[in-house]
Amino acid sequence: MKNRIFLFFLLFFLAISLAKAESISDLAPHAKSAILIDAGTQTVLFQKNETESLAPASMTKIMSMLLIMEAIDQGQITMDTMVSISEHAASMGGSQVFLEAGETYQVSELLKGIAIASGNDAVVAMAEKISGTEEEFVKRMNERAKKLGLTGTTFKNPHGLDTEGHVSTAKDMAIMAQELLKHPQILEFTSIYEDYLKKNDGSSTWLVNTNKLVRFYDGVDGLKTGFTSTAGYCLTATAKKNNLRLIAVVMGEETSDSRSSDVASMLNYGFNTFESVLFLKKDSVLGTKRVENGKKETVEITLKEDYQKLLKQSEPIPNYSYQIHVDTLVAPYHVGDVVGKADVVNENGEVIESLDVTVKEDVEKATFLDLVFRNLKHFITGKILI
Image (cartoon, rainbow, N blue to C red; front, side):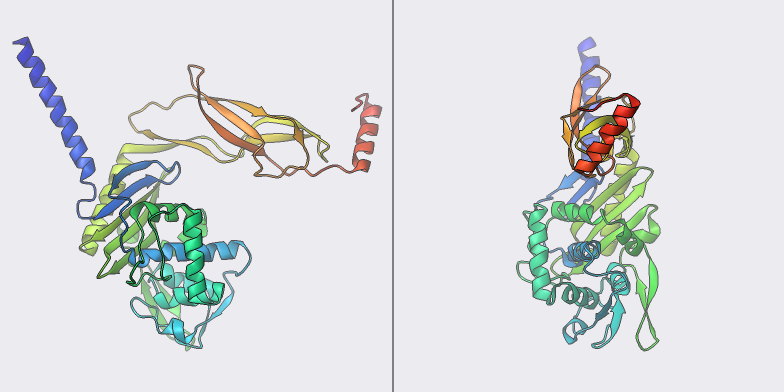
């Protein structure tokens, strides 16, 4: 009798476990491939054929927007830079914002056309502005993909229209999206549901976001849809609730409704199961170190990046302490330079990981006169530096 009772409970708990496993495996039942990651820690929460190379359609524009934002950061262009529309850009088929050759638009207006309405004409105009030709821009796209370690991605154009050999993967798209999110200004464009592009002749083109979740799912503020007959319906979406930002990708969906429902299912799972806990901000001071031959004698030590961890909501939040290890500092040093490590120590005194630390402010090398006056000051105050 006891053995039967034991067997009953064993089968009962096994059934529950299998049900949970099945529910997770079915998060994106209509997608050929999919992935869900935590943007903060890069933790994969769900994946399905995530390395299969497929046509990405207009999700291609995530890489195009990344190169545009990097060109802005590098000072090559600004949001106010005027862009002339070429015959080639105006001739683009597929989704477009109906630009005409000879017109001029600000970068910000073209970004809006790319992010909201997926304008192929707008993205080609930006490609030509940044690299001179569309071909040179595509070369830069592939170089950037290589630097990001994207092994399943090859770009043939900046817009995503079907072209032989133009492929990516759900995993690679998530990495691209994560890199684009390092430029949070892009969310000012991708989070708009509808707007207008004012034309040169005074008329306006109505722009409606192809990502319907921007309107219908709380927290979604990007990033990019895609559709072609080869690719099917695709979507790379990002959403943030509390301190948790998720990135979800689906590829090869049969309908626009199924891509939205699958992504919503993935996001629901992520937000209902996990939480992102910020343990220490990157500007938190961990200690002070003396700097040899520096214009400043000491400098505060901070983390290079925020320290956050992804936890299940059912888990207790652990208490950590931090031990810094920094070798002798000899100026010059600049914010962002790695100067040592901070060990994360749990309640049992175990080191669970080591984090890069940097200086809180730049420390330039002292001149000979700086050192003379400093030693004179210390002599007067009773402290003599050797």
